[in-house]
Amino acid sequence: MIVYENRYDVIVVGGGHAGCEAALASARMGCKTLMLTINLDAIALMSCNPAIGGLAKGHLVKEIDALGGEMGKNIDATGIQFRVLNTRKGPAVRASRAQADKQQYRLRMKWVLEGQERLDLKQGEVTALHVEDGQVMGVDTRGGVRFQGATVILTTGTFMRGLIHIGLINYPGGRAGDIPSIGLSDQLRDIGFAVGRLKTGTPARLDGRTIDFSQLEAQPGDDPPAPFSFSTDCITRPQVPCYIAYTNAKSHDIIRSGLDRSPLYAGIIEGVGPRYCPSIEDKVVRFPDRDRHQTFIEPEGADTVEYYPSGLSTSLPIDIQWTFYRSIKGLESVEIMRPAYAIEYDYVDPIQIHASLETKLVRNLFHAGQINGTSGYEEAAGQGLMAGINAALRVQGKDPLVLGRNEAYIGVMIDDLVTLGTREPYRMFTSRAEYRLLLREDNADMRLRETGHAIGLVPETEYLRFSEKRGRVDAELERIHSAKILPSTADPEFLAKYELSGLQNAVTYEQLLRRPDFSWRDLMPLDATVTESDALIWEQVEIQVKYKGYIDRQLDQVARAKGVEGARIPEEFDYVALSGLSTEVREKLQKFRPDTLGQATRIPGITPAAIAILSVALKSRG
Ligand code: FAD
Image 1 (cartoon, rainbow, N blue to C red):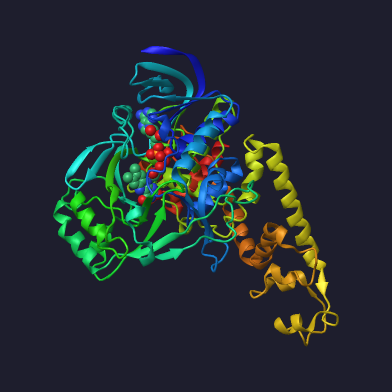
Image 2: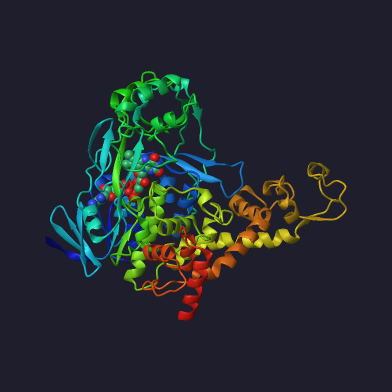
């Protein structure tokens, strides 16, 4: 091995969505950082759907942005269709989603990385970690170079021993067009990590010149499009539509006719797939009574004819793919540009990492993204950001940053992973969060901007902008408490509309905003200071007023759980010496080694009685 002359504080292995956030975070926090990745042209490449956000994933993007990450800004600059989902539902589940111009997304992210001080980018496949006395010291590449680093973050995605399946044909690959990562996961297994196998799949990419769009239902984006990032003023790129199409009985017959050559049904694929994102053959088999399945035909970019048929991922043989896609109305003459495929890959059970994302087996080694068993760009980016932050904090000799389940979806995700582990691809859902009303998209900045600024990721200008917004929200909350309309002087039409005509006493804005049928925009005719340009401020005010009861209740629950959540369990805690625990509970605690009493409560099979014993033992240690 030739040892490279520079020594890094942080080495990030992988240039996917986790790797990009990790590398930017550590470099922005002052650490000399190296990103090593197999192909520099594939930085931030979207392996599957050309879109960012969606239900619960939009929350993650807003949180990443609030903490000072890049994903939100990147999609704002390169998005070609923005929509807010669930607008008719409560604020907790509203979620932003945007189609990306896939190539522009990756190019801009690479450009941001290249412009980042203290960050070196190098192409190379890491084949081994350099570990001494249980501590990582650097990495070795296939090209025979050793890079030395105080900390290493592995973000290998779907690449470790990646195996691509199309029908009964399979071949090694990290994803279509990329080589796999060989060697690394064998070493991880030798070290003692529980390395498992997962699977995911993607649809074919279709040639838009051969799609009859007149037969499809166009779905436009929102007008005006709402940005993801708290720092973006407005979206400037032209917006394009997506299209809706449906499979039919003929499509399903074709799929069934190919099942004997499906690697999934022939038992060739051993990895566990994502249950919430099944392949089309899975859907047809599992729901035989459904006569059609919807698909969104999504553009891959403004400068390409490639389209992504969302929801139609498959690993069926190519001849079945040809006939199946062409059985769909509007796609009768469609040409496939890239075939659909499934991929199996190695991941490491995340119960072997701390909530800081540092591994329990190798000091200063962090894991983030798909390597931890998650699926999705946003999940990966959220972990990458936290791993980058915590690697930098380790280098600076500071305590790790761990977000609570009451603070962020990122906190919920990491807590789920490290306390429960995962046997199937994990993706974020709003239902995973117990404090949903506190963890809204709209208040991600209120929850996390301060933290992002304190660790040095949110620049001063962005922080000032946030402080100003927070000040305005507080001031308006104060004002609406006393600002009122007098029934005697108010517009009779307004009074009639809100059934206030017979009222004798004044009504405060706050009382009005509490009403389910009254929105802050209804204040505009009454008060010239309430304007559309302050929409974000008023939206915040309205939500805080309307949902105050529910929010207070959740805050109460958080306060009550605080003692348990915060009680730290020392790493060397001796569960064997603790009397009163059943053998099963003792074994579980030894296996999971929770960092806090809060984590211990969430390990399946750990009883309240065991928690009480543990709690007393921790208190007696002082
Ligand atoms: P990736 O984006 O995979 O990036 C990994 C990076 O690490 C790459 O840059 C790679 O070159 C680099 N790398 C790997 N090993 C090494 C090494 N040894 N040395 C140096 N560099 C290395 N997500 C969904 O949410 N829904 C889906 O339906 C879905 N379907 C998918 C289908 C397919 C076929 C694939 C490939 C992915 C799919 N995904 C899906 C997953 C999504 O792509 C990932 O969740 C996301 O990209 C993970 O981000 P990451 O940063 O962890 O890894």
